[in-house]
Length: 421
Image (cartoon, rainbow, N blue to C red; front, side, top):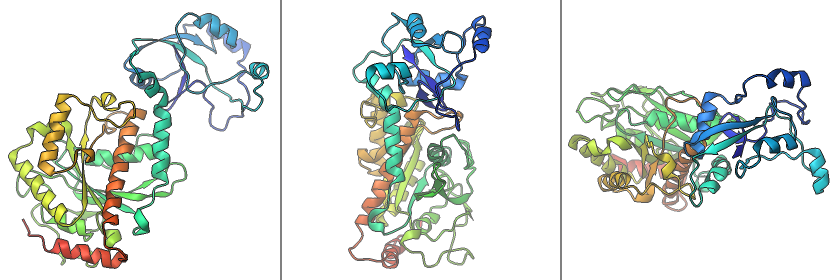
């Protein structure tokens, strides 16, 4: 049995409205009597109920108690819900008289809109599952706090630049939208999302991420590109990639698949420094399409990998559209799914890109839905954290005592030695 109310995607026993005074909820008797004769229905929206069901493992919920319909007292709630099983709560409200009886005097009371108690049928009875569903919000908030406090290694740069590279429709733009949604506190779609046929991203975009708490820009940027294509003359041109890595391509540059950028372009950045460069490359791939990658696409990825490697830039792989992400999240929220299907896909990526398995990450982006899912948030934030750690490894590997300008120029020299394709 679970006693809860939802506010956005978060599970609460009691919900305090924005700006409401911190006084106990006292329903109007006339209001209570009017609704007592009506059918008892949950206050949750359809989306909120689906999120709660997913969090508990696709269970069925039966509403047992509703404070605005039944008597708003602990005794009445117990009478309605007794012998229905153990109760799980996420935020506990203790009545003032009970606090006095227990000798607990210093708890701030909360106003709430509704108290609802559900019987949960079909919940998984496995070791650690209850811990996971009750600890998910705490773990998610811990990741958020860690990333909000992040600072690039040794303050060598003020912001980390993460480049998203991958085929059309792999989820590059969706990943940016998902990261932004987590920090904003609601699902948002700033970047246009492409189809699985042609790339809708034609501009090079350097996206900043703002913290929803105070609106300040966080110290990392996500750089979105045109999708890679297996055909020549379609999608991102291979000669554009070294220029992007070096920091020579400006924000909002319009890609031309058959004509890469050169130093003669009016907006070309001729003297980029370390802060302009890419510090981590994330290869974005749809996990459902890995086994069907053409030999031409695999060869193109190998060429990109060589370019990035010769520039000394850290790399990770980001597998998107992970439908079984509830299985990916084990007790510590980080272990990947050990199913043979996922393992075969992971091993193929590891062989193709020569990337350690620890740097092959999994997410399920926000695409059609409009409500946040705390389990998705954990995967998105964990992937972002690994990218920032990879970028820190890149910065730490620079020669000691280098300045921003010197470091940038030394890396430019390395990339300038790369052949054109």
